[in-house]
Length: 112
Image 1 (cartoon, rainbow, N blue to C red):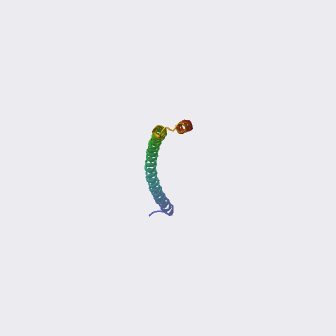
Image 2: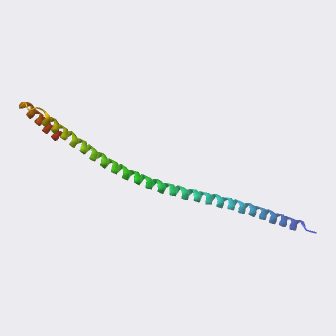
């Protein structure tokens, strides 16, 4: 027959094993959660890199569009200047009137 001391020791041993099992399970759960967090972190880092690449591409596109807009504005100014020349040269020559139109033309060129 087992003595009371032996029974107490055995109970403590089983309680210790049970507590140890709880710790192992808890540790496994924490490791699984950690693995999920690492996967999510990797996905977020990849998304950040992709967004940075998209942003750089959009910024480059904006620069190209700004350059094209500047070229278009320059072309519009040239067309307006040429239109003024055409208007001046197609008006009937009435002496003083043409000189005024030419002065207007030259003042418009200086303004642009």
